[in-house]
Image 1: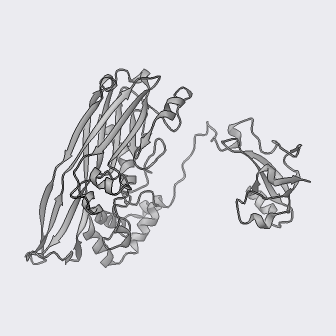
Image 2: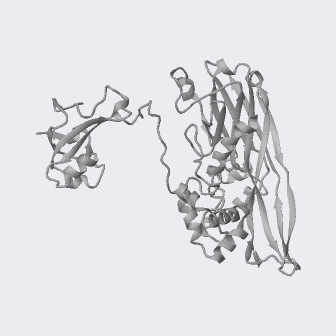
Image 3: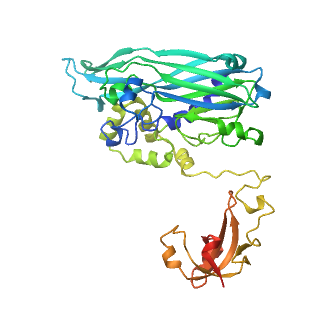
Length: 432
């Protein structure tokens, strides 16, 4: 049951945390793929002491509704990528860095192995009293893949190796009007030596580290939009390097190094991973079609995930392309969206007014423009122009803006028909 709960969180994590793993054009030789592993790197503490731009730990807090969580168990999944170095070697033992066989260019490359550490079920009562501190270890591993020439003879091999990664996970909770859960992930791997390069440190790091939490019979409270009774507790929650949001229903949390809104989802039109985060699927897929056969061959030899992208784009049927081009989703007609004036009957830009120099100014008033906020270079051309007020608007923070149309602009009628106006603060207008 927990695995099913985490499936939505995993799909969102994959779409964001593989960013930078192998960017278009999906070739190891591309300049943009020379600096990789950008998000969620937890490196050995010895290396971080030499390079303060890196971190060895991440921590976050989230709220649990005690009314639905008193008898709950918590499930914790720490997930990330374990770097695996791949080297091309010839039968002679020479390591040329690349080898072309059967139209595929095999190259040296740092691959990613998906790893997960599961903890639980953890009774919340136990977390309140003493917490849980669990060490973990990702073991070293090596393998050999033989490469064959078209005639079947040995042409070389791919050597793969992973270094061990060590760390710990700590989970605790505190009482209060709402319970506060704290999760800390820390890498304890020793550095290879004080002057290690980032590439050497990455081999002993947990990359794209993120945490998923699930409650059995309980619910979490949003930190981004908490109910009034939880607002103070939510404001006290702290995150460092990893940030929790609700996924699916309120019983699952994803804490990731990329800040997301609550309840993020993968669009159903997306045909598969592109490893370019939230880049537009259609644009990336079309770009793949522009690659030459030689570039595609190198991409296929760079990484199995890149090869899957190339093959998928090459064989994508017309109906999938059509879905990628754009989708309109209906809104709930029983609920007016918050951005529509009709959502609040006390707000109506057509009749609302604002006080300017002691006078009530609303739709139809004649004003002279006195731009002073320097919000736009075009304001220089609008100074002292005469305009007519089209409406008085308020934003979600109750800021007031006045929409106007220029009296001497021949396009004003067309712009007004489209609902396009110029917007100014009240203190930038002089009533005529």
